[in-house]
Length: 138
Image 1 (cartoon, one colour):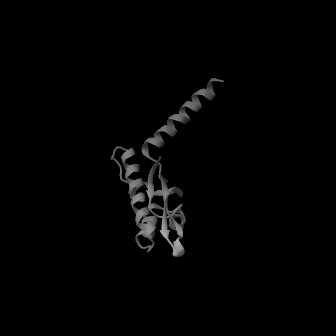
Image 2 (cartoon, rainbow, N blue to C red):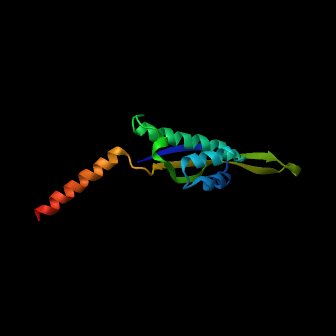
Image 3 (cartoon, one colour):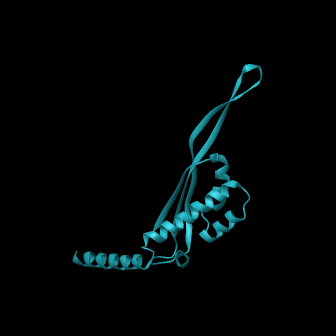
């Protein structure tokens, strides 16, 4: 089972955010949080909140009955896309103006458990029973 968390319109360029997103993609959640906690980039502060939100969303999908620590969560997908851009003008010499582009980005994190849930194991057993019953009829 997987859960998604998104951060939209983060006031940081997508290029700067991708440098940190690339560090945590595919890692276990505990390792990713350690990397983000001790990284000095500003993007790591934003990403830590998104990863914690994804973990909370995963737990919420199970009605809060299970803890995420028992199922060894992994960051399955992580990416940063460009968002809208605020365009401004700054005065320049000789009556001219220079353009300023304030960039922002959207971040998406998807976490997935590696240890199967008890309900998933039951569904697999039921599926195998159904397959055996249908194959015996032929």
